[in-house]
Length: 366
Length: 233
Image (cartoon, rainbow over the protein chains, first blue to last red):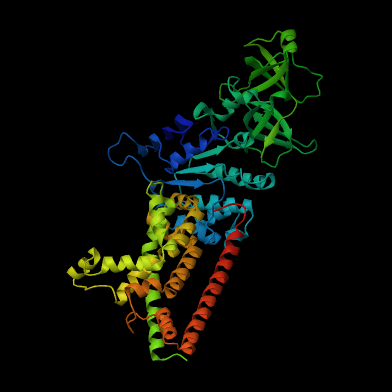
């Protein structure tokens, strides 16, 4: 599969970055890490806005390779990227239309794969075209900035914390557009954030970064459930599952999803049957029983195998539970459960054991 | 009222200030751009040289220009060998003096405007496929518009108001080097206070009008850009 490659090193006073990343050539890759971990620098190196040492390539198109004698560094304006900055950074001297046209007019007609109508429709900004940037709300500005980047028909879309300058309401306004964009995107997206919920919602592929290094890189659903990574140590540790909507039960206000061949009931969703959705299950909302309880108030009781155990401290244990459904050999069918150490010892839980996971709550994202 | 010679001085002053302003913008813009962007160690010394006319008495500048452009100075020998003759006591000598003397008034506002916009708009333009020259023309210049406006007005007005440099290298030749400020001085020397008053009052009115227009225009720009609010561009 074609891919995004960034093998780069950079060091300046008090900070060193050393990563060797290969990201899938489709879908959304999220770089997740605390401020100052170097995730934005990776993005800037992909864009050519900063020159690190190493190699940067997309689909075999080499944008930087220090080993090359000829053209070791392709400047930013010659890379087929779209870049969305943290602040919308619209040109204040141009109208919304002028901003959208700025990049679009600078690529040859033959390379224009995204039409103005398409981008404007996708981001819902048709009514804003004549406005000046100073007459837009924060969320509107960011949507225009995303459309502007899309209109260069990039082969790679880079997004640097596009929501972090927005308050919760504006964030909720822009997120659905991002999801719609990702569903339809014909180009890989690399998305930088320090917000766990954005990563859980958007990531197909996840890269965890810390202090200039990559801790782990892999399918997002897998990384969220790995007990050896810090994500599973958080209070709000949660598994993220890709699911398909099966049917709605409006009478009880619930929708049925299918995850790894198993049914999972969640609160009623707008999504149509057949549509792919993403569910999140908090570790503290999951408990285990050795036999299937038939008299429990809990609706979602799924057969699973204990894949891994980790002592969190004197009182709690986190379990990785692999769902034993039809499609359980596929990735991303592991959920987390947080139980007391006392329960672990009483039930004598061990790796490889068959159990039933009682899921008290599962939330759809978006 | 103004006599024919005064009108001649007025026309000459307008010509000198216009030409100087155009040259100042052409020469000052690249230097302002460099000063605003560079991380070079030469930035300090270059900025100091550019700012020197702010602190030097105009007569000092005039004196050294006279020496440099005179028959024994290196510039004078160059202009002679090029067949241009000598620059002191000519209109072009005044242009050289005005440009040097007004340099900081033009470079500094432009430099500040370039610095204020920061790196971000140019990075955005680069990710939207604009080449370096394209970025400069389509983003940097329009965003620095208030700086250019201030620079043009200050450069023009400062040239109009110049006296020391002109007297040192230009003298008082009607139609060639007698500008308004020198003509005014001449009237006072001749105790013709009536004529002096016409010229002086005219220049006060001119200065007031210039500053008023500048504040009105820049006030307008400041208002529209500050409304961009929150997200800095």
